[in-house]
Length: 152
Image (cartoon, rainbow, N blue to C red; front, side, top):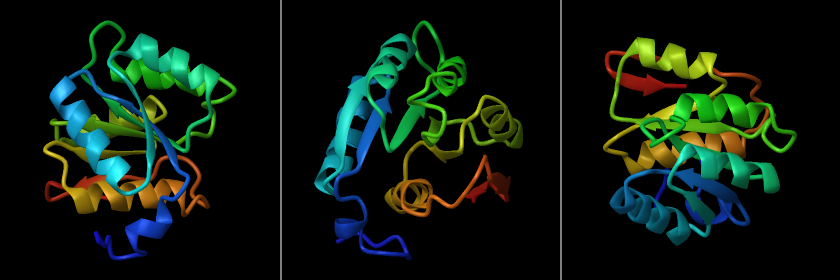
């Protein structure tokens, strides 16, 4: 059983639905497998256009958004999802290999709530998901980098 320092993962994510937006099919399969092992229902999109359509038809508990997508990249996709009735309050968590304060600030400007960095560490992923899905008392973006470590 994976522990994130808060609650056990087996009970926290029961009935959670996530949209995973990831262009790399191998990364998509790996992340989907990790999430479904914890009981999370996962829909996938490989590009921003498909993600926008899916987010418009279904309300998700969170969206994991790769930023390097073909066509409409992740930042613009997040901004457009924020304009949908189904996406106004949905936590959007950026995924990227880029670990810089400027990146975090840009993600914040485009309406993203948090970010995880690749390669993805399981504890960080589940902590971030729990923070935005379970502890829903947060409003707006609240993240920054210190010493190369993502802090919320």
